[in-house]
Length: 76
Image 1 (cartoon, one colour):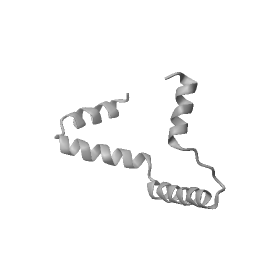
Image 2 (tube, helix red, strand yellow):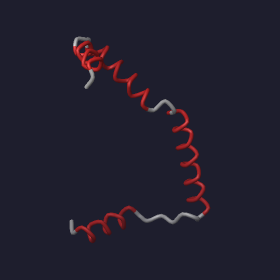
Image 3 (cartoon, one colour):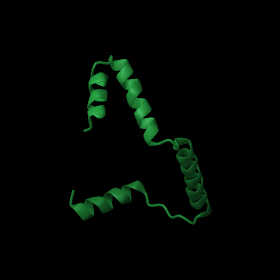
Image 4 (tube, helix red, strand yellow):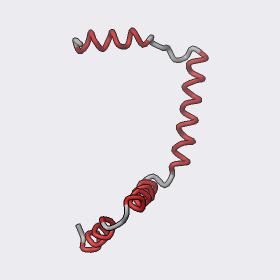
């Protein structure tokens, strides 16, 4: 860790919890600056999957069968 980073950490440690939470939110937001774009891409993907299900292009497997396959494969 650099001296500057260590200085920041010391300052953060002295902050009240509500300010720490706000800081964490801002840091996380900075890691995914394109969240709106990501959300829009997920919306498009969900709509595509719904269309595939409704058109019959995608085949579904009942949940009971999925769990039976898991139990069979992993013996649980």
